Amino acid sequence: MVISPCCMKLRSFFSFLIAGVLALLGLSAGGFYWLTTHTPLNLLAGGPTTTPAAAVFVSKQAPLLASMLVNPDRLEALRQVFATPEERSRSHAEFEQIKKSFLANTGLDYSRDIQPWIGDEITLAVTNPDFDRDSSNGQQAGFLLAVSSQNVDRSQKFLDSYWRQQSRGDKTVQSEIYKGVRINYKQAPISQKKSASFSPFNPFSLPTSKLPSSFATAAVGGNLNSGNNQSFVLFSNTPIVIRDAINNVESANLNLDNTPEYQKALQQLTQGRIALAFVNLPQSAAEQNPQVALNSLAVAVGVNRRGLLAQTALVTSRENTASPTLSEPVQALQYIPSASPFAVASTDLRNFWADLSSTVSANVEVSNLVDRTLADIQQVWGVNLQQDIFDWVQGEYALAVLPNSSNSADWIFAAENSADSQKAIDKLDEIARSKEYSIGSFTLRNQKITAWTQLTTTPNYGKENNRKSAIETEAKGVRATVGKYEIFTTSVEAMDAALEAAETGSLVANQDFQTSIEPLPPSNDGYFYLDWPSSRAIWEKQIPLLRLIELSARPLFDHLRSLTVTSTGEITGIRKATIFMRLN
Image (cartoon, rainbow, N blue to C red; front, side, top):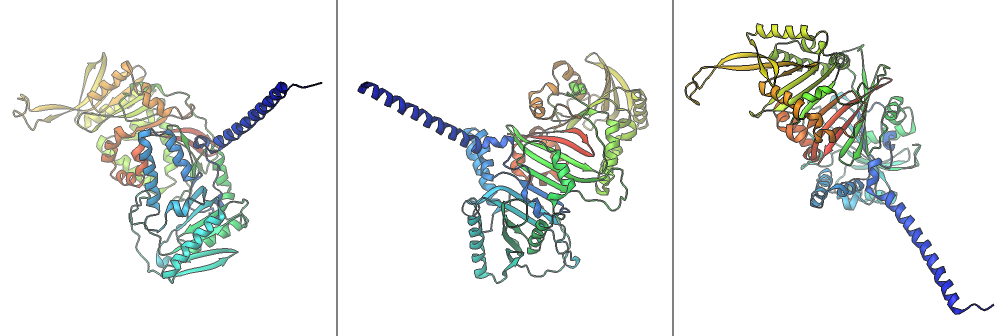
Protein backbone atom coordinates (compact mmCIF):
# COMPACT_ATOMS: atom_id res chain seq x y z
CA MET A 1 0.00 0.00 0.00
CA VAL A 2 1.37 3.34 -1.05
CA ILE A 3 0.59 6.45 1.04
CA SER A 4 0.47 9.53 -1.06
CA PRO A 5 2.56 12.55 -0.13
CA CYS A 6 -0.66 14.53 0.25
CA CYS A 7 -1.95 12.19 2.99
CA MET A 8 1.39 12.30 4.75
CA LYS A 9 1.33 16.09 4.73
CA LEU A 10 -2.25 16.09 6.01
CA ARG A 11 -1.39 13.63 8.83
CA SER A 12 1.66 15.74 9.78
CA PHE A 13 -0.50 18.82 9.77
CA PHE A 14 -3.09 17.23 12.12
CA SER A 15 -0.33 15.93 14.41
CA PHE A 16 1.16 19.39 14.59
CA LEU A 17 -2.29 20.88 15.18
CA ILE A 18 -3.11 18.44 18.01
CA ALA A 19 0.29 19.03 19.62
CA GLY A 20 -0.26 22.78 19.32
CA VAL A 21 -3.73 22.56 20.87
CA LEU A 22 -2.44 20.43 23.75
CA ALA A 23 0.41 22.86 24.33
CA LEU A 24 -1.99 25.79 24.24
CA LEU A 25 -4.32 24.05 26.70
CA GLY A 26 -1.35 23.35 28.96
CA LEU A 27 -0.24 26.97 28.84
CA SER A 28 -3.81 28.15 29.41
CA ALA A 29 -4.21 25.85 32.41
CA GLY A 30 -0.89 27.00 33.81
CA GLY A 31 -1.77 30.62 33.16
CA PHE A 32 -5.19 30.21 34.75
CA TYR A 33 -3.60 28.57 37.80
CA TRP A 34 -1.06 31.37 38.07
CA LEU A 35 -3.75 34.04 37.76
CA THR A 36 -6.04 32.42 40.30
CA THR A 37 -3.22 32.00 42.82
CA HIS A 38 -1.54 35.38 42.29
CA THR A 39 -4.42 37.73 41.53
CA PRO A 40 -5.01 40.23 44.35
CA LEU A 41 -8.75 39.47 44.06
CA ASN A 42 -8.03 36.32 46.09
CA LEU A 43 -7.73 38.59 49.11
CA LEU A 44 -11.51 39.00 49.04
CA ALA A 45 -11.63 35.46 50.45
CA GLY A 46 -8.84 36.15 52.94
CA GLY A 47 -5.07 36.19 53.16
CA PRO A 48 -2.75 33.22 52.57
CA THR A 49 -2.95 32.29 56.28
CA THR A 50 -5.84 32.50 58.72
CA THR A 51 -3.94 32.81 62.01
CA PRO A 52 -0.66 34.53 62.88
CA ALA A 53 2.17 32.02 63.16
CA ALA A 54 4.08 34.59 65.22
CA ALA A 55 1.62 34.09 68.11
CA VAL A 56 4.05 31.43 69.37
CA PHE A 57 6.52 34.22 70.21
CA VAL A 58 3.98 36.12 72.31
CA SER A 59 3.17 35.50 75.95
CA LYS A 60 -0.37 34.40 76.79
CA GLN A 61 -0.62 37.43 79.13
CA ALA A 62 0.43 39.91 76.44
CA PRO A 63 -1.92 42.93 76.36
CA LEU A 64 -2.09 43.16 72.55
CA LEU A 65 -1.32 41.24 69.37
CA ALA A 66 -2.10 42.67 65.92
CA SER A 67 -1.24 40.89 62.67
CA MET A 68 -1.48 41.68 58.98
CA LEU A 69 -1.76 38.33 57.22
CA VAL A 70 -0.91 39.43 53.70
CA ASN A 71 2.10 40.91 51.94
CA PRO A 72 1.76 44.73 51.80
CA ASP A 73 2.44 44.74 48.06
CA ARG A 74 -0.52 42.42 47.40
CA LEU A 75 -2.73 44.68 49.48
CA GLU A 76 -1.66 47.65 47.40
CA ALA A 77 -2.30 45.66 44.20
CA LEU A 78 -5.87 44.92 45.36
CA ARG A 79 -6.46 48.61 46.03
CA GLN A 80 -5.26 49.38 42.49
CA VAL A 81 -7.74 46.86 41.04
CA PHE A 82 -10.74 48.71 42.50
CA ALA A 83 -9.37 52.24 42.09
CA THR A 84 -10.40 54.28 39.07
CA PRO A 85 -7.61 55.35 36.67
CA GLU A 86 -7.72 58.82 38.24
CA GLU A 87 -7.36 57.39 41.78
CA ARG A 88 -4.52 54.92 41.11
CA SER A 89 -1.66 57.38 41.28
CA ARG A 90 -3.05 58.85 44.50
CA SER A 91 -3.51 55.37 45.98
CA HIS A 92 0.06 54.40 45.12
CA ALA A 93 1.34 57.63 46.66
CA GLU A 94 -0.58 56.93 49.89
CA PHE A 95 0.94 53.46 50.22
CA GLU A 96 4.40 54.87 49.55
CA GLN A 97 3.87 57.55 52.19
CA ILE A 98 2.86 54.93 54.78
CA LYS A 99 6.00 52.89 54.05
CA LYS A 100 8.23 55.95 54.29
CA SER A 101 6.56 57.12 57.50
CA PHE A 102 7.16 53.82 59.26
CA LEU A 103 10.83 53.84 58.22
CA ALA A 104 11.46 57.60 58.57
CA ASN A 105 14.91 58.48 60.00
CA THR A 106 15.85 54.80 60.34
CA GLY A 107 18.16 54.79 57.33
CA LEU A 108 16.10 51.96 55.83
CA ASP A 109 14.40 51.92 52.46
CA TYR A 110 11.42 49.61 51.90
CA SER A 111 12.14 48.75 48.26
CA ARG A 112 15.83 48.11 48.88
CA ASP A 113 15.91 46.60 52.37
CA ILE A 114 12.50 45.05 53.13
CA GLN A 115 10.62 44.21 49.93
CA PRO A 116 13.08 41.53 48.66
CA TRP A 117 12.37 39.22 51.60
CA ILE A 118 9.13 40.23 53.38
CA GLY A 119 6.51 37.46 53.49
CA ASP A 120 2.80 37.25 54.23
CA GLU A 121 2.75 38.14 57.92
CA ILE A 122 3.57 41.21 59.98
CA THR A 123 2.76 40.86 63.68
CA LEU A 124 3.11 43.58 66.30
CA ALA A 125 2.67 42.76 69.98
CA VAL A 126 2.80 44.68 73.22
CA THR A 127 4.41 41.88 75.17
CA ASN A 128 4.54 43.34 78.67
CA PRO A 129 3.52 46.65 80.30
CA ASP A 130 6.94 46.71 82.04
CA PHE A 131 9.43 44.32 80.43
CA ASP A 132 12.19 44.59 83.05
CA ARG A 133 9.79 44.48 86.01
CA ASP A 134 11.81 47.24 87.67
CA SER A 135 9.74 50.03 89.18
CA SER A 136 12.83 52.19 89.84
CA ASN A 137 13.12 53.18 86.17
CA GLY A 138 9.41 53.61 85.53
CA GLN A 139 7.12 51.51 83.36
CA GLN A 140 8.78 50.47 80.11
CA ALA A 141 6.51 48.54 77.78
CA GLY A 142 8.00 45.74 75.70
CA PHE A 143 7.27 45.71 71.96
CA LEU A 144 7.84 42.86 69.51
CA LEU A 145 7.57 43.11 65.73
CA ALA A 146 7.72 39.78 63.88
CA VAL A 147 8.00 39.94 60.08
CA SER A 148 7.84 36.69 58.13
CA SER A 149 10.60 36.05 55.61
CA GLN A 150 10.07 34.32 52.27
CA ASN A 151 13.80 34.50 51.49
CA VAL A 152 15.94 33.56 54.50
CA ASP A 153 19.23 34.43 52.79
CA ARG A 154 18.04 37.93 51.82
CA SER A 155 16.63 38.68 55.27
CA GLN A 156 19.84 37.49 56.95
CA LYS A 157 21.94 39.61 54.60
CA PHE A 158 19.73 42.59 55.45
CA LEU A 159 20.35 42.13 59.19
CA ASP A 160 24.10 41.56 58.71
CA SER A 161 24.41 44.68 56.56
CA TYR A 162 22.41 46.80 58.97
CA TRP A 163 24.43 45.85 62.05
CA ARG A 164 27.76 46.23 60.23
CA GLN A 165 26.83 49.82 59.49
CA GLN A 166 25.65 50.42 63.07
CA SER A 167 28.79 48.96 64.64
CA ARG A 168 31.13 51.30 62.74
CA GLY A 169 30.32 54.33 64.82
CA ASP A 170 28.39 52.94 67.77
CA LYS A 171 30.25 51.11 70.52
CA THR A 172 26.99 50.10 72.23
CA VAL A 173 26.23 47.51 69.51
CA GLN A 174 26.47 44.02 70.97
CA SER A 175 25.76 40.44 69.93
CA GLU A 176 24.98 37.24 71.77
CA ILE A 177 23.88 33.68 71.08
CA TYR A 178 20.77 32.71 73.04
CA LYS A 179 19.56 29.11 72.69
CA GLY A 180 21.09 28.89 69.24
CA VAL A 181 19.71 32.22 68.01
CA ARG A 182 21.96 35.22 67.37
CA ILE A 183 20.59 38.42 68.90
CA ASN A 184 22.09 41.76 67.85
CA TYR A 185 21.21 44.84 69.85
CA LYS A 186 22.04 48.36 70.92
CA GLN A 187 21.89 48.68 74.69
CA ALA A 188 20.30 51.84 76.04
CA PRO A 189 22.02 53.69 78.90
CA ILE A 190 20.45 53.22 82.32
CA SER A 191 17.83 55.91 82.81
CA GLN A 192 16.29 57.30 85.95
CA LYS A 193 12.63 56.90 86.75
CA LYS A 194 10.47 59.20 84.67
CA SER A 195 6.99 60.37 85.41
CA ALA A 196 4.31 59.01 83.16
CA SER A 197 3.34 61.34 80.35
CA PHE A 198 0.89 61.22 77.49
CA SER A 199 2.17 61.71 74.00
CA PRO A 200 -0.06 61.30 70.93
CA PHE A 201 1.01 58.48 68.59
CA ASN A 202 0.46 58.81 64.88
CA PRO A 203 1.66 55.67 63.06
CA PHE A 204 0.93 57.12 59.62
CA SER A 205 2.76 60.41 60.11
CA LEU A 206 6.02 60.11 62.04
CA PRO A 207 8.24 63.02 60.97
CA THR A 208 10.62 62.48 63.92
CA SER A 209 10.54 58.68 63.91
CA LYS A 210 13.83 56.93 64.65
CA LEU A 211 15.07 53.66 66.06
CA PRO A 212 14.98 53.65 69.87
CA SER A 213 18.23 53.90 71.82
CA SER A 214 17.67 50.28 72.85
CA PHE A 215 16.97 48.14 69.80
CA ALA A 216 17.34 44.40 69.11
CA THR A 217 16.85 42.00 66.21
CA ALA A 218 17.04 38.27 65.58
CA ALA A 219 16.36 35.91 62.68
CA VAL A 220 14.53 32.74 63.69
CA GLY A 221 13.31 29.87 61.58
CA GLY A 222 12.02 26.34 61.57
CA ASN A 223 14.97 25.23 63.71
CA LEU A 224 13.01 26.39 66.76
CA ASN A 225 10.38 24.07 68.20
CA SER A 226 7.55 26.26 66.89
CA GLY A 227 5.44 23.66 65.12
CA ASN A 228 5.84 25.42 61.75
CA ASN A 229 8.61 25.98 59.23
CA GLN A 230 8.13 29.73 58.77
CA SER A 231 11.09 32.05 59.20
CA PHE A 232 10.76 35.40 60.96
CA VAL A 233 12.82 38.48 61.55
CA LEU A 234 12.18 39.77 65.07
CA PHE A 235 12.52 43.42 66.04
CA SER A 236 12.19 44.69 69.59
CA ASN A 237 12.99 47.66 71.78
CA THR A 238 15.10 45.42 74.06
CA PRO A 239 16.88 42.05 73.85
CA ILE A 240 14.91 40.97 76.93
CA VAL A 241 11.74 40.76 74.82
CA ILE A 242 13.45 38.64 72.15
CA ARG A 243 14.81 36.24 74.77
CA ASP A 244 11.29 35.94 76.19
CA ALA A 245 9.95 35.31 72.66
CA ILE A 246 12.36 32.39 72.19
CA ASN A 247 11.37 30.98 75.58
CA ASN A 248 7.69 31.22 74.62
CA VAL A 249 8.30 29.12 71.51
CA GLU A 250 10.04 26.39 73.46
CA SER A 251 7.38 26.23 76.22
CA ALA A 252 3.95 25.72 74.69
CA ASN A 253 2.18 26.56 77.95
CA LEU A 254 3.70 30.06 77.88
CA ASN A 255 2.66 31.31 74.45
CA LEU A 256 -0.58 32.82 73.22
CA ASP A 257 -1.05 30.38 70.35
CA ASN A 258 -1.70 27.51 72.79
CA THR A 259 -4.10 29.44 75.03
CA PRO A 260 -7.61 27.88 75.09
CA GLU A 261 -9.28 31.31 75.33
CA TYR A 262 -7.39 32.56 72.25
CA GLN A 263 -8.31 29.48 70.23
CA LYS A 264 -11.90 29.62 71.46
CA ALA A 265 -12.26 33.21 70.24
CA LEU A 266 -10.69 32.45 66.84
CA GLN A 267 -13.17 29.61 66.25
CA GLN A 268 -15.99 32.17 66.24
CA LEU A 269 -14.29 34.30 63.57
CA THR A 270 -15.30 32.40 60.46
CA GLN A 271 -14.86 34.88 57.60
CA GLY A 272 -11.79 35.25 55.41
CA ARG A 273 -9.36 37.74 56.86
CA ILE A 274 -6.29 39.79 56.00
CA ALA A 275 -5.67 41.00 59.56
CA LEU A 276 -6.27 39.79 63.10
CA ALA A 277 -6.03 41.43 66.52
CA PHE A 278 -6.30 39.95 70.01
CA VAL A 279 -6.53 41.95 73.22
CA ASN A 280 -6.26 40.65 76.76
CA LEU A 281 -8.57 43.08 78.52
CA PRO A 282 -7.29 44.53 81.80
CA GLN A 283 -9.05 43.23 84.89
CA SER A 284 -10.01 45.74 87.54
CA ALA A 285 -8.75 44.99 91.03
CA ALA A 286 -11.49 47.17 92.54
CA GLU A 287 -14.26 44.84 91.34
CA GLN A 288 -13.56 41.42 92.87
CA ASN A 289 -16.70 39.60 91.74
CA PRO A 290 -18.26 41.38 88.76
CA GLN A 291 -21.50 39.98 87.33
CA VAL A 292 -19.84 39.61 83.93
CA ALA A 293 -16.06 39.87 83.52
CA LEU A 294 -14.67 40.83 80.09
CA ASN A 295 -11.65 38.61 79.48
CA SER A 296 -10.47 39.22 75.92
CA LEU A 297 -11.41 40.56 72.51
CA ALA A 298 -10.54 39.13 69.09
CA VAL A 299 -11.05 41.03 65.83
CA ALA A 300 -10.70 39.61 62.30
CA VAL A 301 -10.61 42.06 59.38
CA GLY A 302 -11.43 41.02 55.82
CA VAL A 303 -11.67 42.83 52.49
CA ASN A 304 -14.96 43.65 50.82
CA ARG A 305 -15.31 45.16 47.34
CA ARG A 306 -16.65 48.30 49.01
CA GLY A 307 -14.44 48.39 52.09
CA LEU A 308 -13.37 46.44 55.16
CA LEU A 309 -15.50 43.86 56.97
CA ALA A 310 -14.59 42.93 60.53
CA GLN A 311 -15.86 40.26 62.90
CA THR A 312 -15.39 40.58 66.65
CA ALA A 313 -15.55 38.01 69.43
CA LEU A 314 -15.75 39.31 73.00
CA VAL A 315 -14.92 36.57 75.51
CA THR A 316 -16.73 36.96 78.84
CA SER A 317 -16.80 35.01 82.08
CA ARG A 318 -20.31 33.64 81.66
CA GLU A 319 -21.46 30.70 79.53
CA ASN A 320 -24.54 32.33 78.07
CA THR A 321 -25.96 31.65 74.59
CA ALA A 322 -28.38 34.00 72.82
CA SER A 323 -29.60 34.01 69.23
CA PRO A 324 -30.06 37.21 67.21
CA THR A 325 -33.53 38.72 67.62
CA LEU A 326 -34.05 40.28 64.17
CA SER A 327 -34.12 39.11 60.59
CA GLU A 328 -34.83 42.51 58.99
CA PRO A 329 -34.46 46.21 59.96
CA VAL A 330 -36.89 47.33 62.67
CA GLN A 331 -40.01 49.18 61.49
CA ALA A 332 -39.24 52.10 63.81
CA LEU A 333 -36.68 53.18 61.20
CA GLN A 334 -39.57 54.36 59.01
CA TYR A 335 -39.64 57.54 61.11
CA ILE A 336 -35.95 58.27 60.61
CA PRO A 337 -35.36 60.70 57.69
CA SER A 338 -33.07 59.54 54.90
CA ALA A 339 -30.80 62.53 55.57
CA SER A 340 -29.92 61.26 59.05
CA PRO A 341 -26.15 60.68 59.24
CA PHE A 342 -26.34 58.70 62.49
CA ALA A 343 -28.87 56.11 63.66
CA VAL A 344 -29.20 53.30 66.19
CA ALA A 345 -32.04 50.79 65.90
CA SER A 346 -32.85 47.62 67.83
CA THR A 347 -35.34 46.09 70.27
CA ASP A 348 -35.81 45.88 74.05
CA LEU A 349 -33.85 48.88 75.27
CA ARG A 350 -34.57 47.93 78.87
CA ASN A 351 -32.84 44.56 78.57
CA PHE A 352 -29.98 46.07 76.56
CA TRP A 353 -29.31 48.66 79.24
CA ALA A 354 -29.40 46.08 82.03
CA ASP A 355 -26.95 43.90 80.10
CA LEU A 356 -24.67 46.85 79.33
CA SER A 357 -24.68 47.99 82.95
CA SER A 358 -23.59 44.59 84.23
CA THR A 359 -20.87 44.42 81.57
CA VAL A 360 -19.30 47.84 82.14
CA SER A 361 -19.36 47.29 85.91
CA ALA A 362 -16.50 44.84 85.38
CA ASN A 363 -14.20 47.79 84.63
CA VAL A 364 -14.17 50.71 87.05
CA GLU A 365 -12.76 53.20 84.52
CA VAL A 366 -15.37 52.39 81.87
CA SER A 367 -18.14 52.33 84.47
CA ASN A 368 -17.14 55.79 85.74
CA LEU A 369 -17.06 57.14 82.18
CA VAL A 370 -20.58 55.85 81.47
CA ASP A 371 -21.86 57.21 84.78
CA ARG A 372 -20.40 60.67 84.11
CA THR A 373 -21.89 60.77 80.61
CA LEU A 374 -25.33 59.79 81.89
CA ALA A 375 -25.10 62.32 84.72
CA ASP A 376 -24.37 65.13 82.26
CA ILE A 377 -27.35 64.18 80.05
CA GLN A 378 -29.68 63.76 83.00
CA GLN A 379 -28.67 67.13 84.44
CA VAL A 380 -29.44 68.90 81.16
CA TRP A 381 -32.74 67.11 80.54
CA GLY A 382 -33.80 66.71 84.16
CA VAL A 383 -34.73 63.03 83.73
CA ASN A 384 -33.53 59.70 85.03
CA LEU A 385 -32.75 57.91 81.77
CA GLN A 386 -33.10 54.40 83.13
CA GLN A 387 -36.35 54.92 85.02
CA ASP A 388 -38.02 57.49 82.76
CA ILE A 389 -36.93 56.24 79.31
CA PHE A 390 -35.13 52.89 79.18
CA ASP A 391 -37.42 50.82 81.40
CA TRP A 392 -40.59 51.20 79.33
CA VAL A 393 -38.98 50.62 75.89
CA GLN A 394 -39.38 46.86 75.55
CA GLY A 395 -40.14 46.68 71.83
CA GLU A 396 -38.57 48.30 68.77
CA TYR A 397 -36.77 51.63 68.96
CA ALA A 398 -34.71 53.91 66.73
CA LEU A 399 -32.55 56.89 67.71
CA ALA A 400 -31.13 59.29 65.13
CA VAL A 401 -29.40 62.63 64.60
CA LEU A 402 -30.77 65.12 62.06
CA PRO A 403 -28.64 68.14 61.03
CA ASN A 404 -30.52 71.45 61.18
CA SER A 405 -30.14 74.89 59.64
CA SER A 406 -28.20 76.28 62.65
CA ASN A 407 -25.24 73.94 61.96
CA SER A 408 -26.06 71.83 65.01
CA ALA A 409 -28.18 68.70 65.37
CA ASP A 410 -31.68 67.63 66.35
CA TRP A 411 -32.50 64.24 67.84
CA ILE A 412 -35.30 61.85 66.91
CA PHE A 413 -36.33 58.92 69.10
CA ALA A 414 -39.07 56.50 68.01
CA ALA A 415 -40.11 53.69 70.36
CA GLU A 416 -42.79 51.03 70.20
CA ASN A 417 -45.59 51.37 72.76
CA SER A 418 -45.68 49.12 75.80
CA ALA A 419 -47.94 48.72 78.82
CA ASP A 420 -45.85 51.31 80.68
CA SER A 421 -45.69 53.90 77.89
CA GLN A 422 -48.50 56.19 79.09
CA LYS A 423 -47.26 56.13 82.67
CA ALA A 424 -43.79 57.13 81.45
CA ILE A 425 -45.19 59.96 79.30
CA ASP A 426 -47.21 61.28 82.25
CA LYS A 427 -43.98 61.29 84.27
CA LEU A 428 -42.23 63.29 81.55
CA ASP A 429 -45.09 65.82 81.59
CA GLU A 430 -44.63 66.16 85.37
CA ILE A 431 -40.92 66.79 84.90
CA ALA A 432 -41.69 69.44 82.26
CA ARG A 433 -44.11 71.24 84.61
CA SER A 434 -41.54 71.14 87.42
CA LYS A 435 -39.15 73.00 85.11
CA GLU A 436 -41.94 75.54 84.41
CA TYR A 437 -42.41 74.44 80.82
CA SER A 438 -45.77 74.87 79.15
CA ILE A 439 -47.49 71.84 77.61
CA GLY A 440 -49.55 72.51 74.51
CA SER A 441 -50.99 70.63 71.53
CA PHE A 442 -51.31 71.38 67.82
CA THR A 443 -51.78 69.50 64.55
CA LEU A 444 -48.94 68.67 62.18
CA ARG A 445 -49.45 66.49 59.06
CA ASN A 446 -52.84 65.43 60.45
CA GLN A 447 -51.21 64.20 63.66
CA LYS A 448 -51.79 65.51 67.16
CA ILE A 449 -48.50 66.86 68.45
CA THR A 450 -47.61 67.76 72.03
CA ALA A 451 -44.84 70.25 72.76
CA TRP A 452 -43.00 71.18 75.95
CA THR A 453 -42.24 74.87 75.49
CA GLN A 454 -40.58 77.71 77.37
CA LEU A 455 -41.21 81.44 77.02
CA THR A 456 -38.08 83.55 76.45
CA THR A 457 -37.43 87.24 75.80
CA THR A 458 -36.24 88.52 72.44
CA PRO A 459 -32.90 90.37 72.72
CA ASN A 460 -33.43 92.26 69.45
CA TYR A 461 -37.00 93.31 70.12
CA GLY A 462 -37.98 96.19 67.84
CA LYS A 463 -34.66 96.17 65.98
CA GLU A 464 -34.70 93.03 63.86
CA ASN A 465 -37.37 92.38 61.22
CA ASN A 466 -39.66 94.88 62.96
CA ARG A 467 -40.47 92.46 65.77
CA LYS A 468 -43.65 93.45 67.56
CA SER A 469 -43.31 91.02 70.46
CA ALA A 470 -40.61 90.73 73.08
CA ILE A 471 -41.66 87.14 73.90
CA GLU A 472 -40.66 84.02 71.99
CA THR A 473 -41.75 80.41 72.45
CA GLU A 474 -38.93 77.89 72.43
CA ALA A 475 -39.70 74.18 72.06
CA LYS A 476 -37.75 72.08 74.56
CA GLY A 477 -39.23 68.81 73.36
CA VAL A 478 -41.91 67.51 70.98
CA ARG A 479 -43.77 64.18 71.05
CA ALA A 480 -46.49 62.38 69.11
CA THR A 481 -48.26 59.02 69.17
CA VAL A 482 -48.31 57.60 65.64
CA GLY A 483 -49.78 54.13 65.29
CA LYS A 484 -47.96 51.86 67.73
CA TYR A 485 -44.99 54.21 68.16
CA GLU A 486 -44.17 57.12 70.41
CA ILE A 487 -41.98 59.69 68.65
CA PHE A 488 -39.89 62.25 70.53
CA THR A 489 -37.87 65.06 68.89
CA THR A 490 -35.95 68.11 70.03
CA SER A 491 -37.73 70.50 67.66
CA VAL A 492 -40.91 70.91 65.64
CA GLU A 493 -38.84 70.79 62.45
CA ALA A 494 -37.42 67.40 63.43
CA MET A 495 -40.92 66.07 64.17
CA ASP A 496 -42.07 67.27 60.76
CA ALA A 497 -39.11 65.47 59.14
CA ALA A 498 -39.91 62.26 61.06
CA LEU A 499 -43.56 62.26 59.94
CA GLU A 500 -42.57 63.12 56.38
CA ALA A 501 -40.08 60.23 56.31
CA ALA A 502 -42.88 57.71 56.88
CA GLU A 503 -44.77 59.19 53.90
CA THR A 504 -42.06 59.90 51.33
CA GLY A 505 -39.05 57.70 52.17
CA SER A 506 -37.07 56.98 55.31
CA LEU A 507 -33.48 56.02 56.06
CA VAL A 508 -34.23 52.33 55.55
CA ALA A 509 -35.08 53.08 51.90
CA ASN A 510 -31.93 55.14 51.39
CA GLN A 511 -29.51 53.51 48.92
CA ASP A 512 -26.43 54.47 50.93
CA PHE A 513 -27.93 52.87 54.05
CA GLN A 514 -28.85 49.72 52.13
CA THR A 515 -25.32 49.49 50.72
CA SER A 516 -23.90 49.93 54.24
CA ILE A 517 -25.91 47.05 55.73
CA GLU A 518 -25.73 44.68 52.73
CA PRO A 519 -22.52 42.88 53.85
CA LEU A 520 -23.82 42.35 57.40
CA PRO A 521 -25.52 39.12 58.55
CA PRO A 522 -29.30 39.28 58.00
CA SER A 523 -29.90 37.79 61.47
CA ASN A 524 -28.75 40.35 64.00
CA ASP A 525 -29.75 42.49 66.97
CA GLY A 526 -30.05 45.82 65.16
CA TYR A 527 -27.78 48.45 63.64
CA PHE A 528 -25.45 51.26 64.61
CA TYR A 529 -25.05 53.40 61.46
CA LEU A 530 -22.76 56.39 60.90
CA ASP A 531 -22.44 58.38 57.68
CA TRP A 532 -18.99 59.82 58.32
CA PRO A 533 -18.72 62.73 55.80
CA SER A 534 -22.17 64.06 56.75
CA SER A 535 -21.66 63.81 60.52
CA ARG A 536 -17.93 64.49 60.83
CA ALA A 537 -18.37 68.13 61.87
CA ILE A 538 -21.03 67.22 64.45
CA TRP A 539 -18.89 64.61 66.22
CA GLU A 540 -15.70 66.68 66.08
CA LYS A 541 -17.61 69.43 67.87
CA GLN A 542 -19.01 67.05 70.50
CA ILE A 543 -15.85 64.94 71.02
CA PRO A 544 -12.61 67.02 70.92
CA LEU A 545 -10.47 63.87 71.33
CA LEU A 546 -11.79 62.64 67.97
CA ARG A 547 -9.41 64.95 66.10
CA LEU A 548 -6.43 63.19 67.68
CA ILE A 549 -7.86 59.79 66.70
CA GLU A 550 -8.33 61.00 63.12
CA LEU A 551 -4.69 62.11 62.93
CA SER A 552 -3.56 58.68 64.14
CA ALA A 553 -5.34 56.92 61.27
CA ARG A 554 -5.62 59.62 58.65
CA PRO A 555 -5.69 57.39 55.51
CA LEU A 556 -8.64 55.42 56.95
CA PHE A 557 -10.66 58.46 57.98
CA ASP A 558 -9.94 60.26 54.70
CA HIS A 559 -11.54 57.37 52.78
CA LEU A 560 -14.24 56.38 55.28
CA ARG A 561 -17.74 56.67 53.77
CA SER A 562 -19.81 54.99 56.48
CA LEU A 563 -19.50 52.73 59.50
CA THR A 564 -22.12 50.11 60.36
CA VAL A 565 -22.05 47.82 63.39
CA THR A 566 -24.38 44.99 64.34
CA SER A 567 -24.44 42.43 67.14
CA THR A 568 -24.97 38.83 66.04
CA GLY A 569 -25.73 37.04 69.29
CA GLU A 570 -23.74 35.14 71.89
CA ILE A 571 -22.33 31.60 71.92
CA THR A 572 -21.19 30.11 75.25
CA GLY A 573 -20.18 33.46 76.64
CA ILE A 574 -18.64 34.87 73.44
CA ARG A 575 -20.46 37.91 72.15
CA LYS A 576 -20.20 38.35 68.41
CA ALA A 577 -20.50 41.44 66.26
CA THR A 578 -19.82 42.47 62.66
CA ILE A 579 -18.47 45.84 61.55
CA PHE A 580 -18.51 47.18 57.99
CA MET A 581 -16.32 50.15 57.09
CA ARG A 582 -17.42 51.40 53.69
CA LEU A 583 -14.56 53.20 51.95
CA ASN A 584 -14.42 55.58 49.02
